[in-house]
Image (cartoon, rainbow, N blue to C red):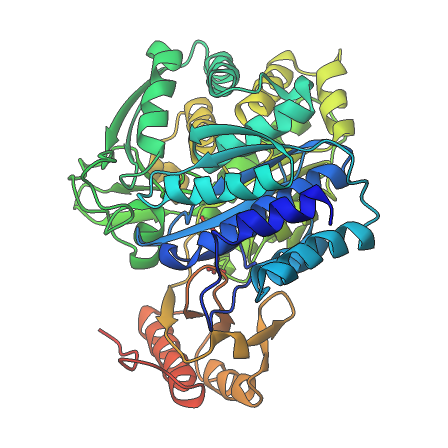
Length: 536
Ligand code: G16
């Protein structure tokens, strides 16, 4: 028996799989109760080694996080060399390895995948690892490192990082032109670019709810690089005692359309919330009357998309800007983008991995999920056009060049997106109320339904329709037809053990009736568990 096979078997023995658990590589990797993840981590270590070897020794990233999920959960996802999510055809291997029943089967799969993908096992492998602040993180990283070591990879453990920082460092290690592959390199690049972007403009002031997560210490670190260019106040930033994501953070704010706990909103201030691993952001403010106004990912698309289009035009460049959304995008945001801005809008399934690939089809692709997860990407041709342009409006070119470096193109990044939005607001000299006035949202509602088996739900047409369970879609369509401008869809979450129901309609009342009627149908027809969803 080869030494590697023996090493994999020996180390695997310390990471037995619990009986009766089925693992799936979902929207953002494996994600579930942290107590169940130990064997998954070990096996992901093996797969990361294979992935690096398959790509000729390029550095692969592994992030240990459950992002917006409650603190009891954890998760893991792989990052490909350019900082993008793991190639989708490899997700199946991840799921197979995670579900292997015996140590022998784990080793068989390791060598089987190598054979199937014609991987040279003598090739060296290199992997960088990061984790968020969850208490389970350290032990899970140790299990991951066991898998990496048994399969002979060189491991660099970066410790506490935001998810986008791990993506950034992975990219820089493989593509040094993107930046210096360290946390300091990340701060230096985006802070220098932000200072250039807003030079000569009035510095803004922002309060950031960090969900008691890793974004808090990292944002504090960034402020020392930003100096006077931005006045940042961190709230909900207690990673020792605060409860991660509990009544705080971007997901709480987006789903409940209300401010996080822990601080008050001064009228017309600029506020935003990160999620637990700082890859999502939403903005909000209170008006003079104290009413709460949310500016979510759709609004970020509208603000940033419009600004880039105008600036590209002013610079006299012939570059196509396109936008990618998901079914969760508010209907009126799509209207605004298509009809007022005249931008092509494409739709994909939920998950930034899907949006990112679609956005690559444009010279400049702007993609944000409604939940605040997204970024802007430039094709290499667009990048060199912008860098090398000699005539055209100098100010517009200057803005585009600095904007490119503020943006973290590898993945949605709350810190970088915050600077992009603030940069645009500073140039426009807008308060959040001006941004809010771009268009009016249709009333919408998101409801979670717990069912016996969410994997029984299969969607088609970019998540807008259900193929299974049979007959449910016809019932949903019948309810949608009863309200004006109605839209509703149902899909299984890939990160939580729930089914998500989305609805929108002309009025708040119609919207809520639709949302709760559809949620009730799901509950009744698909084995609802616990309390039947009811309107509050
Ligand atoms: C992850 C994905 C996002 C997705 C979200 C919710 O976000 O990266 O693209 O929108 O999960 O997915 P689902 O509805 O399938 O649960 P995060 O911030 O939790 O990593």
